Image 1 (cartoon, rainbow, N blue to C red):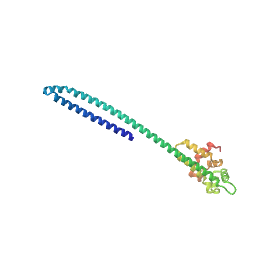
Image 2: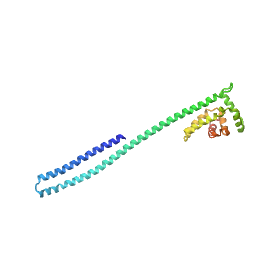
Image 3: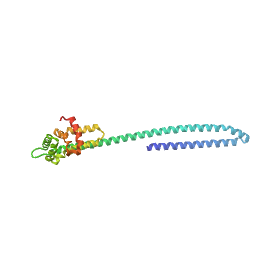
Image 4: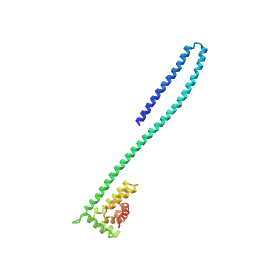
Length: 242
């Protein structure tokens, strides 16, 4: 943009010099004609006749001045078109840079999201491993608790999980719901990416955890994450035969 402005200023300076030279030329011709008549025609009648002849020069200069005005308008119009073209190119470059920056920011945001998504999945598996009891490993104990809960009716299931499960088991679904919430916050209007990552989440869950999720949305304890559990249930029915 600065180059465009500098070029415009240089052109303006050149035009001023041309105008100045033309003015000096006209004044020189006028003074020269006066000097010539005054020195070569001492008789006033003859001077008048010669002066009338030089009237043609005035007409010529008037015509040249008009032609110069038309040409100046043409040059100005051409220069305005060039300026518009330069401004258009500058705007296109700015738009391309903006698109590149926006694309780079989106890529960075996606990388951060994918790292967070993967980390939260890893936490899910680590939590399962931490549920060990006596000689039973964490995953086995968690799945056994899920099987026992899923064999009961809705009211009995609520009583069972509240009485038999500790706080860690009870809150495990909150962690799963947080993963769903992360996806929905990151892609509020992108249905394809929502489908991609929620499907990936569902495929990483065990069969009995998926079965429990389809029933747990009706439990009072999980009322705060009911919408996330219901959404998960839709994907579970789509990907897993329960």
